View 1 (cartoon, rainbow, N blue to C red):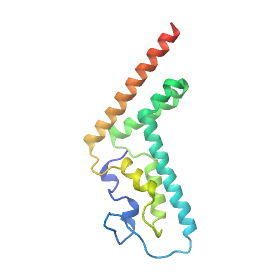
View 2 (spheres, rainbow, N blue to C red; view 1 turned 120 degrees about the vertical axis):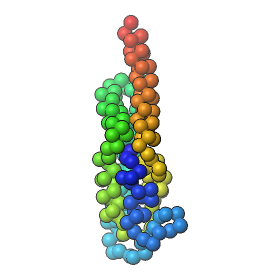
View 3 (spheres, rainbow, N blue to C red; view 1 turned 135 degrees about the vertical axis):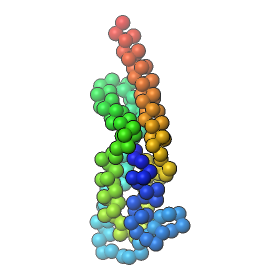
View 4 (tube, rainbow, N blue to C red; view 1 turned 180 degrees about the horizontal axis):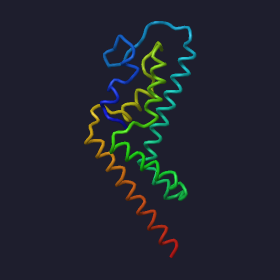
Length: 161
């Protein structure tokens, strides 16, 4: 949930090592003795990316869980507000620099990006993300959650009556 200018379209791993492959990804052919350590770092970066994707999904659609688990609203509302503010003001989610640091430390690996980075990163950091698109995303999150919470409050009112 950051602007395109803040995150390269190729991803940090691709920009950090060379030579680049035709798909924009890169492979470092140097062999390192501590590949086990790098695999751990790679796993950590992938876990942060999965957490980031799960948080975004919770921000957008977590209100659906609130319809069944009412107390979850206390967690969802601040998360949804954070997601909207990040999009409106172009802030950087704290998970982004954490993932970037891990990917930077992981740049000596002998293989291309993994499955998780290959498929999730473009969803979280889409190429061509403009300020106008971020405003539309914020509006989308606001409208989806306003609709869900309207249903939630109507159900609570009718149950109390």
